[in-house]
Amino acid sequence: MKLALTIFMISLVVLLGCAPAPDPGDKATTPPKESSTPAPAGEVQQAVEGYVNGEWITNWDDALRFATALNRPVLVNFTGSDWCGWCIRLRNEVFSQQDFIDYASANLVLLTLDFPRSLPQSDELKAQNRSLQERFRIEGYPSIILVNSQGAEINRTGYQQGGAAAYVAHLRQLLARN
Image 1 (cartoon, rainbow, N blue to C red):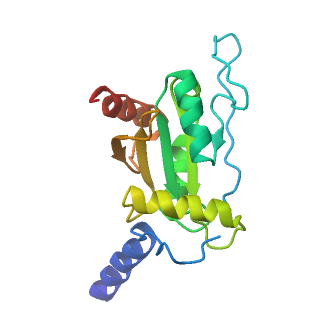
Image 2 (image 1 turned 180 degrees about the vertical axis):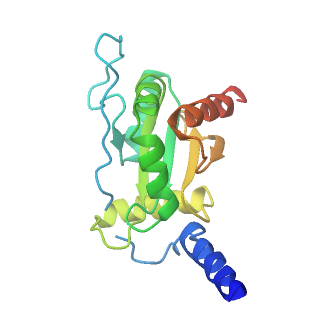
Image 3 (image 1 turned 60 degrees about the vertical axis):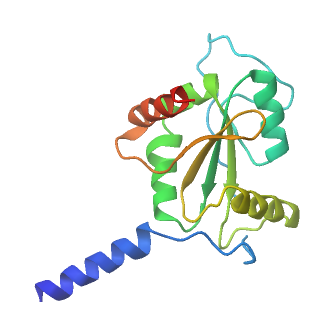
């Protein structure tokens, strides 16, 4: 009985935690609007028309343009927002928390590239996301890629335990290596 339970638990972890990236030819379907609050009032923020600090955007070209204007890296979140357990944990434990929101608002441009299973997405957005999935050789979710304003990879990571403060420290280390 213990063996059967152990096999069941291991299978469950593998199924829920190690989801492969969908085939680029699959018809994936639109990201839910991931939103976050801008940095606290009183902080001096650079302004760029069309971009709100700390907000997730979905257009690669816009992300690079904003990164250039703000002199910031882009955090690219490859996610399966409506099916990937680890993606949902990352969103809930890190991306929606004030420590991350404050850091991102002042230091990053946030880009989400979603590969949902049941949410609608435009053909243009699907094509962009598949192209970037291939370009960065994404094989599983979540995959977090840090890129410079020219779109060159700085570093990559994924889900990390420890919450938002620990994740911010992790991102600082990854960016410091550049």
